[in-house]
Length: 595
Image (cartoon, rainbow, N blue to C red; front, top):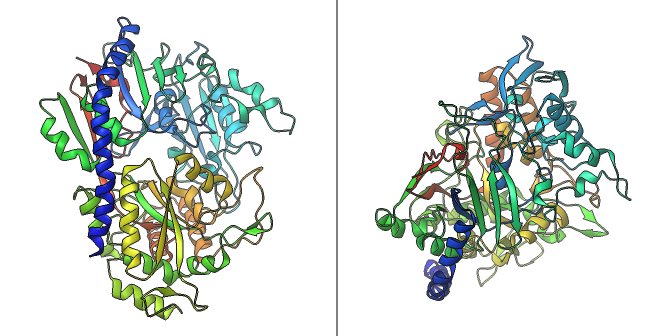
């Protein structure tokens, strides 16, 4: 009886979508000429048009909280990850470890240049790691990945000559090689912004390369450079003439001259633009799969299946008991619920994940239970002991009653003090999956007497709550990473890291929080991640990460929901696409050719 109510809500939204679709048909004739005109401006150049619903909040890679997918066009690190999740060379042509695993020497490729033609040398590598990533005055995401061992020390980068850099580690650090995927930035352009300070004593780097910067001033080392940016409309990237890659015949890559990324507010509009021929690339939502599959041949495009997505959906509660500016971040009554383990377990048991896969993903998905991908050697399967929460309303109610909750005559859940259990669930309003998922979860939790108030918000507000104000109760997140190397997720687990969202510590120059407490299990997971990173023996590493997965599923800081297949539709005129869920769809963009 409850599922149809949720379905009715979804249908109402789809009815509105249908109306929007009909109205949009009238716009297609207007959009087509505009796309053609854009192609005409390019002259004889080749180009493809893609879309994104999110624009960057900054063009500074270290300050990007939104729209960071554009970095795949602009920057490379010393190494990269291939479509199998393996590490391969990028800016570096080789690496070599010392016998004690405390040093690693990278040799850069000959003749590397930045997009302005200046040489890219070991100085840039040392600058990036020493003066940006590990600079205490810069709120860099990289610190979480580079902190080594119980001491929390960082690697030291030293120049040996123009092409060689050595990293000195305080102790053996198994994941270090993978961390060097991070972007290398240009010292000749950015060093002055590190040295010079603003009126508050902060490096000017923090305000450097904002979205109002002249694109020509933004220097890159990847296959493309930033050509232009029209806020709310598009970002244009043009081929980097100094990019290092060449094919077997010595021809420079990439082959496609220009990429235009249109700003498209939602999935429905992107679908309309793809079907009308405006877009060359579309991330396929399961709602569209059957429709697009029928049109595949006639529409002259191919749907690629990359396997199960590596970014899943999760629910998390704000477990932070701290006080900021004299006020608790979370209502103390609700905070007691959220910090009760049995409460979180009951919520997990009450969500019909199989139903979500069937309704939201049309059966094109699966049920994740770990932040570590199933293809990883460190993954712990349910058969090997990973706790799993199967849909069970009776068990959920029993757990709640045993933890001091009770039900009134209306079936509403009350706590010990007779407070009605009610909280707000926040999600990104522009994401179709989350928009459809939220009312179903609301219906699921009503079956155990919990009233959930839905709060759809623009992505900027969602990010602001997570990263700045921290005044939220419950969130659904899409894109929570499931990784091959467990340490790639470490910034979610270290208790003082930037992405420890469920109990976040304010970062540099943010308003402090008092009375924040870290649970014993929370600290234990963080300690195990430290231990796992310092352990070279693979058998021991597997045991360590097996324990972290068990703890994560017992205490549920993240409740894993459902995961869809990773599907993209690409015009057949684009050749050479290699697609895997473990790799950004554009990761081999430099190999793409146009018929």
